[in-house]
Length: 203
Image 1 (tube, one colour):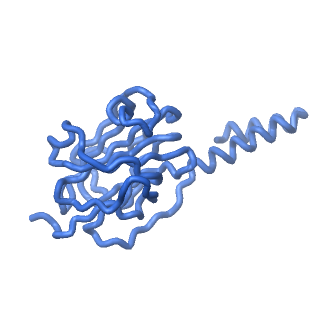
Image 2 (tube, rainbow, N blue to C red):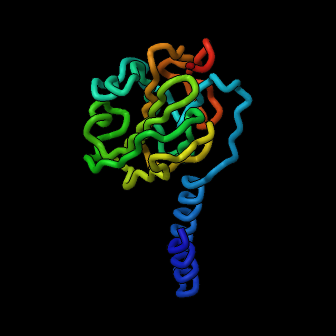
Image 3 (tube, one colour):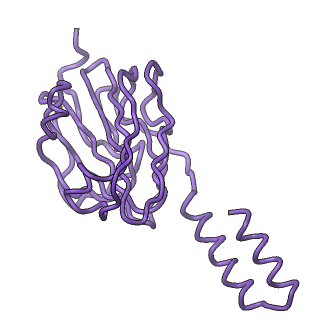
């Protein structure tokens, strides 16, 4: 973002005010995209919150390779360029698995993006069972940033990374979790309840 400010200043000083205005607009756009607002949840501990701002585009079963990790249900959230793109931990727990994979750049709202695009996967062991999420790059996204490594202890709502420009985040839950959202619902990372473990912590 610093280069846009310097370009705007340089354009103005060299007598190109129209070009300076273009760079100022770009600078404001970048500032809006990388905004990082405070988020807090008053939900009880058994509630899983959204890992991303955006719109729910799918609710259903996990991919087969995810089911092998004790997970059964998925909630997919599409993030447009206008959304806050900081991702947050959906639940408190210990990071069992975390990795990044290179991939393609299909539009994030398309189902095939889930399997083919660049992504990062994180598996948590919580007091209520396993919970996982996957950050998936879209057609405009140039980089998935995952700030999580195995062994870390995460708090619910804690910032865990960012996907630069439009993208998708998928949340994976065990069969005993109760999904609270439906396709079309809007979510806010770290705040919107998306699922609940009503029976309490697992022994």
